[in-house]
Length: 418
Image (cartoon, rainbow, N blue to C red):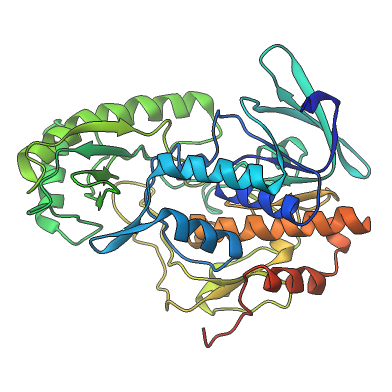
């Protein structure tokens, strides 16, 4: 299909977990949908970032479907293969009837009194203009909302600092008969050795934590140990520095694993992420701002669109390595996310999903996890489809109708008893 000549009901920008879910959901619910992505494949950080576990939880039909088709039990975790996940995303999107435009980063948008009138993506030979009735920003950094001049807070409210950037990698040659798989605080002896290596200059600072995860395939492990603080993920110069630093850290970390960690004596580098993973950038102003109090008190909002999110406050240290000392306690019970958090201020035909929704820095540390973002995406796609079919703007959508549709498509009804 020639995307240059088409107008769409729903146009989704960004093909991470929330964007893929939004596009599939919109198409399955009858909307003529286009998903636009800057990379040459689907998945965002769930594939390009070389992640291999679904952290956190939120029940939605699409997340359940994808999790059941991708994960296997390996030790104490359920893990997936990001390469196989790329293939599954593409098959589900194609089967839904949605159209896809890859290799097309967002360039700009035009806004009038009614909202976004068009966007422009950067094609290989020339800019490509695209139009739709409803737009969904699933870019992570909120690139479309930013260009539409939606107000936002960058990073933490008090000082603008953001969570650190990390670049994951995988290793082979792991002896699983004696391998260990540490996470924060579980192997203080290894963390002390890491800190010593950093202090001696063997590994560039601020690395220091030790996180190793069982791989999908025997003899492999995923390594989440690089770290770059005070990086603005929306600044190309700073991201370039982060990419350089984290890849330098990989060399030292690989040597550390071989010399100090049981089961990794003969490990070798298998793969590095396509690019460093950005945890936090812009928090946009919506009709409601989700707070840490809402999460800690397990609030059930009347206009819920995520019914049972479960994730602790997982900020990484903003000044060093390891978890943030300011993280709040979490009781492990589910909370909801209201539709109003997906509605940006002042732009009538735009929906947000994923980590760029309206919320505080601390709340974001919980809802940024991929299953929760995927549930937001499915809800945003269903909402957009309802809007185009009934000629509603997203802010005029009767949320009860959206909730009934979500319940039919795999969402639970919110309950503190879950």
